[in-house]
Length: 397
Image (cartoon, rainbow, N blue to C red; front, side, top):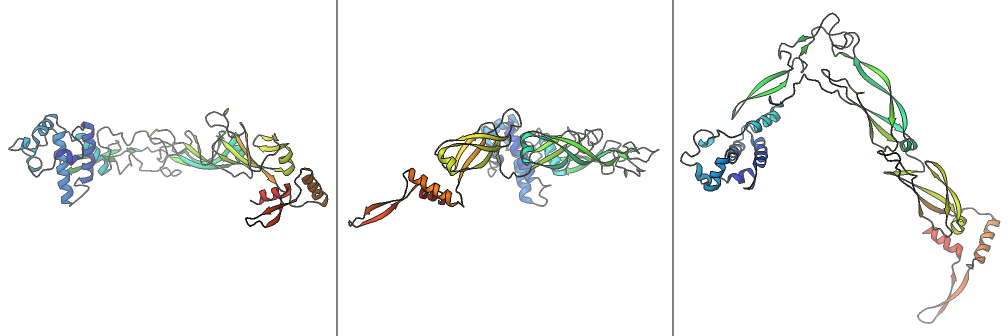
């Protein structure tokens, strides 16, 4: 046994690993290297046996104590008993839970232990629809009516799927259980695997004479109008769930749900980020210079805002509580942030131009010549920029 690898190294755990850590490590290795997952792979089979032997020892408190004290020598000379892989005894090793899970994954069954009967009540599938709403409807909420195709019990057969005058019969293959048991041979013996019955598809019933109106499904499709309440504050891409308006359940299970995805149309003025709204508002040169009361558009209508004298372009102002309501609490709202943009007039009358020049002069900003000297003492003249020139430069930047 001198060539054997350390059992802790084999499982990839430290010496202080508890039972849960050992089981988790072994389960991963057993699933990876199990011969049924690697047919004909001798190396995988060897690693599977190695991991199984390591787990058999370390999962047993007495064997683990011996191994920690004497190493592999504790099981030499028949100390490990006979049988198993390479003469190693696997009796007492707790492989039941692990291989129940593994074979459930490998062969598609849920295992016999703790599995829910396939012909038990199951919830129906969900139906998905979408609805387009305006920006304002997303902010304040609204009611929408949708056309939805929903399956209802067939009135001809009362949902049985059988032709009137006949009834579904118990499936002879599964005896009405909806499940059949298959066996799978493994290194540890015969493993039983439970799967839905292929004849009745897990229902436990066979319909020999099908209803002509529903084709044996027991349901017919009807187009219905369903009212949807869109809550205030909903955002683009979010969904509204309407309980039990989806597909019918199976074997007495509840209906699925109707999931309505909301698509919010773009707004020409407003933009949204979470609970906040953003927009721009134009102001005139005179309003920026002198200050003024202006009207700003919000989702609540126009509000009056006082622009302070000397306001610069791209100044951002906050309108508290004029944003989007919270989905959890409609009384809580975000804010509306407005960027003030000074607009330069493109066309001016002669009278307006003269008034602006006069204003420039009165403000003491008329064009003046100033002298400048370079490092050699040569003098030159340069025009001092007036108010109008400064404004022009500001907008050209």
